[in-house]
Length: 142
Image (tube, rainbow, N blue to C red; front, top):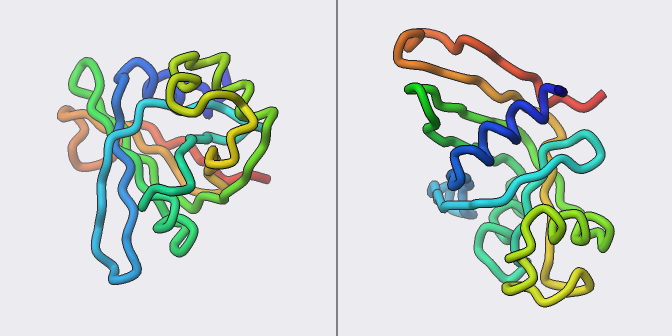
């Protein structure tokens, strides 16, 4: 299993995770997400290009993800994301989560936007190792 897949599996098992961004006034915003996938070796999430999260990430491409999982373990992902649009990526997203079709219709919907982590790290934490993460996975793309 790849490092990226380990992170994706953790997020998927949690079900809902939270993405933090900042607006143009440097105010933080956090919202729930429920979909993530690997695309071309990168951790990728999807959104609607009409939402504030899209506007915020288009202006400031740094995003954090955080989620608390089983066994008192949580993950924090920090890094820089890059916007892309791809009908092929849309098709894969719809295969992974068919309910996206209920929101977006089909893979040609122009509001679909993907963000992939271009650099960053995922750190797994636990209450037992509160002073330092017990595992860090690089999201740097080489």
